[in-house]
Length: 114
Image 1 (cartoon, rainbow, N blue to C red):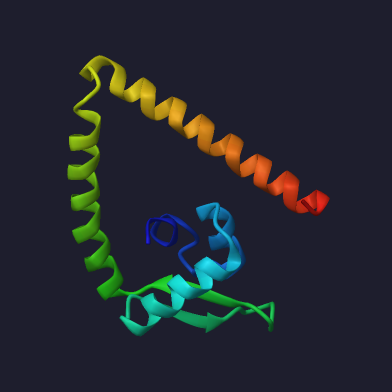
Image 2: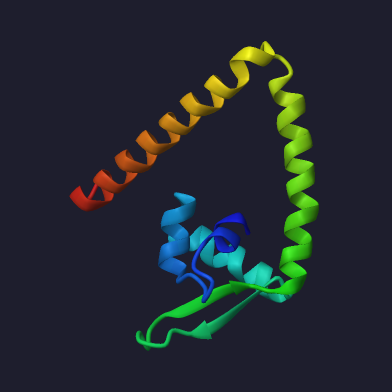
């Protein structure tokens, strides 16, 4: 939901969303099916690519995003409480670096057929 909310206002393609989430296409497809059934997202034909759809967060999805975002912030605060407050931001920055390295490794593996 966050990726859709922060992405293109016209909507993201499933491929764009898969990349933004550092996930695999099957996982994203399954997730989108459930989100569409809950009326949180909609798919519309892409204006220039007949094979693709644009996925957009609907109003109910915005409401759900706000609900779960608050829960996620509370959970993050609880989990990070084990670290000294002065080190929390640095930890999150380092965690993002690890995440980016994982994404790059996965993309390199996909390009090489691994």
